[in-house]
Image (cartoon, rainbow, N blue to C red; front, side, top):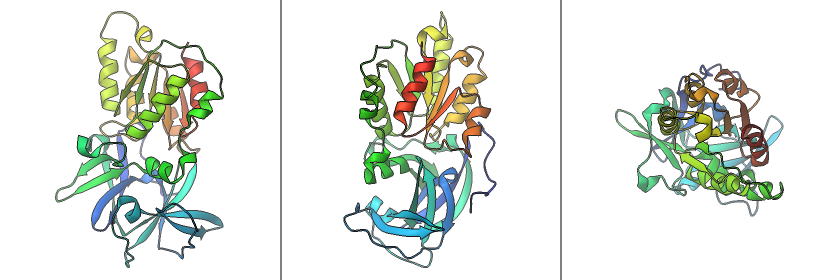
Length: 300
């Protein structure tokens, strides 16, 4: 698997391709869009005083990359085996290598096949954002962005970036935000409120957000009087952000609403996917100051 893997799906189909991997026999999944390549384990150089989840560093074609041991992340026993693999990933404008015990297959599935985890496992600290039921097993989708924020807090959203913008006038227009990560919802709520946007309606996936917007569109009055802007992540159970945007832009009433995609997957290679479904703008996590600037342009 490499940069030219040629498996990018048509934009807005509500599908993804998921790399299934194992840690101590447990099955987990990661969106193939995050994956640059899968390689055999290489020699790891330990780094003193690094985070407990980090095994060390490797050199890969001239780049020095951190190696995160997924067994440590998940609180499972570490091990090395002939099936062990390094999954080289890029998201949130950073590259990282995940050490897993086996990579089994790639599935093409619909986001509506990914169920929300039960309340017991869907908290900020669980790291589980979705469950895919297979015939004889379950595959857990992990919140890799939150894993990296725990290891490197600087890679997250920081309210200080918004405070630098100075005192701001309150905006009364409502923002509808779709974000499946509890941690990111909390951070977005804090930073948007600090930026003067204190009327935010959060949803855990695109399906719930679209149902809410559709209900508003059936009421009297202009939709723009009820909602100023839609903010959406890309990766979400039930309905992803690209499909949500496509549904909004093909709706006779909702199409008037500006949509900003805020995702760790906004790269030069993938930006066209958001453009194809009609998003007004796209911002890469964790660039919160840029996001606020973009919101200011569309919420009048």
